[in-house]
Image 1: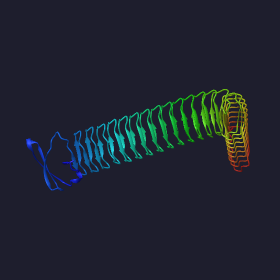
Image 2: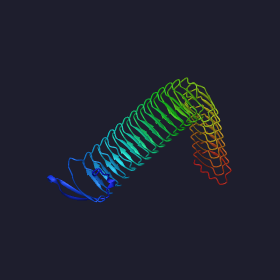
Image 3: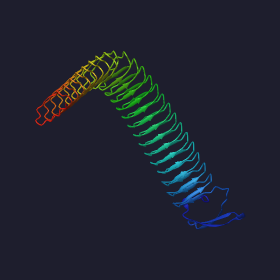
Length: 467
């Protein structure tokens, strides 16, 4: 302000230096608009006001009450004024101040650095970066890429930024955002987060946190012993040590890990995997690919109970058990069974089943065309129509029947008999008495058996028999 007039009323000011009364500096300026000459004393005790239309001017002052008004689009202002108010239309201005109550700017790209604990910043800057230690600061912005860092324990942030990243130690913070990729990190034990972000990752130690999300791939980690999670995420992964947690989800691929001994899980997830040490757990599911791991000896469901009898139509179920006498009946075409039961009998129509067992007398019946069986059973009998099966065994008397045209068998069985119609099969064995029957015209057999008999219709077969 000059003599009560607004800076916009003055188009040009001509300055003339001189000496006033008592030797103080005298400033004479000429208002080009009014055509009048005036003389003004500059008193060091008065608040100085600077007005300029210079687009590149840089002003440095230690005046704690100075007010700067400029249309300079690139001006840089440095001041230690704790109460200064800066108004500018500069789209790239950078302001540095220690003013705890300063209010700045509508600049879309401005960067503000302040230690003001109560500062309120309002901006439409889509790329602004604000750094503050204000514990109660409130930031409102439509910036889609803004990054906010604060130690404010009660801060409330509202933004429509789809990629915003917020870091805070506020134990009661409430964040509302539609950001689909937002990452929130907080140690707030009672925080409530609402988001529609489909890929959000939330890390918190809040024991009572409530999370609501439609994120299909969200990953939540919490130590909350009583947490309640509601989600429609089809691939969600939840890790918790909550002994009484209740999870409701329609996620078809959810994986739940908990040490809750009495947990009750309800899900329609067709591929869910549940791991628990609960000895009395009750699981209800229509999941066709569920995998259950438990030490419960009396559980009544799809389980690894050592004495349980499970009946299921799950086509992809995976059962893990140490039960030596368990009997499993299933029509699951992709079931995978792992057991140390030496006498177990498994019946399945699973075309891709994989069975791992140390049972020396196990009998497996399957129509799986691609099955892979690994066993140390020396007398096992396997029947399969799998055309591409690969069998690895140390059984010296095993008998394998297959129509697999490309099967590769590796065995140390000295008396094994293999029958196959595979035209391109390659057999490697150290069996000195093995008899191989094949119609493969190009088969190559490598053996150290000095008495082996090979029958083939291959007119160009080369046999190299080493004595």
